[in-house]
Image (tube, rainbow, N blue to C red; front, top):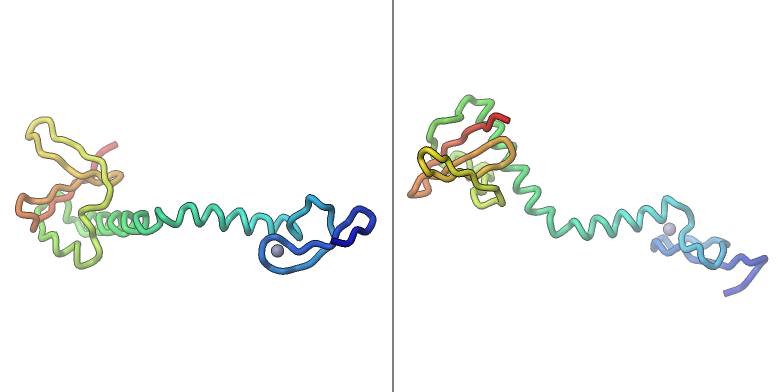
Length: 128
Ligand SMILES: [Zn+2]
């Protein structure tokens, strides 16, 4: 590369192909171009988690909707939820009722249980 007062002819490393004159250790046109690359790296790392996060969010919104509709603490067909995108197999923590021994799946402030034959669901809201 040509040298001119310690400045070199550079091509921005973000991929935008902008050329500039800069010191040898300068890689990017400016901090905006640098953060674009860093954001891309972060977003790629997160990409593998996104489908699961989106599924969990959809499930959580559906549980909130059930609450708004006043349908907590009653058994209902799980198909009412699954046809709207609810996936009972999302990652959840488990909570065991000490009195009855029944296990609930917990998603944030909601707990739910699926009937033995897998056709019914009952949803509770947990008190903090
Ligand atoms: Zn750039």
